[in-house]
Structure formats: structure tokens, C-alpha cells
Amino acid sequence: DSACVSAVHPPPGDDSTLDHFYLTAGEHYISKHASRVPTVIAARLGRSLGVWPAPAQQVSWNSIAAGVWPRWSSWLYWVTWILSIPFVLIAVVSLRRRRAMAWPLYVLIGLFFVVSAALNDNVRYASSCQPALAVLVGVGLTTVVSTVINRRRRVPRGAHSPGAQTQRLPARISLSRR
Image (cartoon, rainbow, N blue to C red):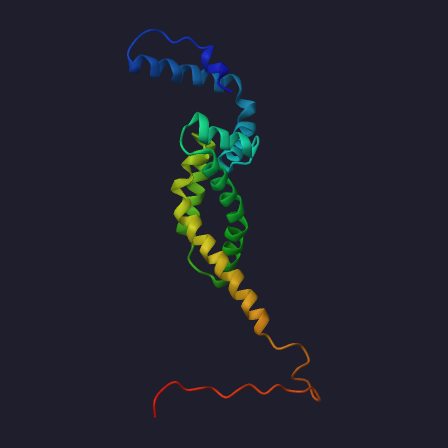
């Protein structure tokens, strides 16, 4: 809500005077409302993820107030953002199991959250971590697809037990010329 900004009346002067005024006003507000810091951080992280207060408000902000994207692309961005989260989590688990070095990817994502919590809470600034997210989504998708393929190729349980019928696989076909 921007009502608090319109209630503040800065003195006349150049940009340095205005900057000092707003800095002082911000520091005063923070000192009087220090108990609200956890709530503010949670709200900023929720806004950064596009899930708080409501996705429609984030889409409206991006398309109307910020004038960044058309409404349809704001919705597409939000849906893609939300659908990518499970694949990122799968990638994190997969990379951890493989003991792969992935900390540079995590640092970019962590930096986005730190900046969002401390300074600005707009999903538009996620571009700093989007390359890392794209890599993790790719790893997550690859993990899911390879897991599904491997499960389909597995021999059913008991197929190699005594008395079970074995399936004869076709001989390997060689494409080389003799």
C-alpha cells in the first residue's frame, strides 16, 4: 500500500535533499516498527515468489502498474514460475544424490531471496536467478524422464526366479558393413 508515502511531505530541494529526507523517514519508521520485520520479510518473499497476497495481484502489478508485460504474458510467466518449482526440487535432490557441485546455482537463487527480503520484493527481479532455475528445471525434467524410462525397461519381479519363463531378446543388429 502506498498510502504511507503520500502522507509524507518532503521539503523542497534537490535529489540529495530528498534522498536524505526519505532515508531519515525510513530509518525512523523501521526503529518504531522493528517487531514487524519478520512479517515484512515473509511478505516480501511471498511477493517475490508471486504467491502473496494473491497471484492475480502480482499479475495485475506486472501488467498494469509496472507496465512491464501484457496481462496474458504475466499469467504465463506466473504459471511457468509455479510449475517449475517441483522440477527444481527434484533437481536439487538428484544433484545431491550424485554429489554434483551445484552451489553456484544455489548461490544465485539465494542471492535473489536475500535481495528480495532486504531491498525489493518484485518477481520481475528474479532475472538474476533465472539462468540457475533454467538449469535446475532441465536437470529435474531429465531426472523425471530418465526415471520413467528406466521403470518401463525394468524386468518385472520374479521374472528371473527359478521356473519363471524367460523372454528371449532379439540378437543385436550390427549396422557396420562387413
